[in-house]
Image 1 (cartoon, rainbow, N blue to C red):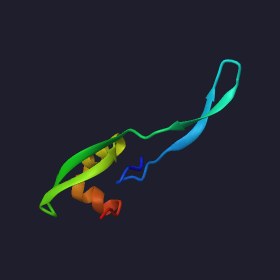
Image 2: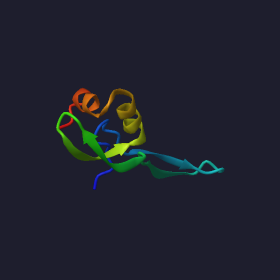
Image 3: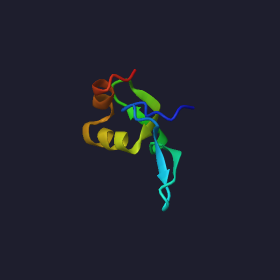
Image 4: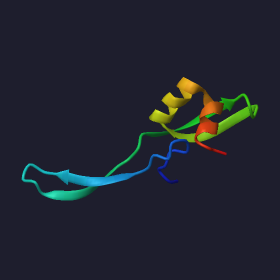
Length: 74
């Protein structure tokens, strides 16, 4: 499965590991993703989404249905 948040679209970032001697090697920064089942009042069913913790905070603040409308998730 891809490592992309289904609400916010957060995905992998690339960068460098930098040693004490300033040797640089490529590395990957992964988003903090988790699978969650959330209840949608508007659709009257459970929805399974792969979400970042930032997306969960957005859902806590404005609600699931409002967040799905704001970010155009189907």
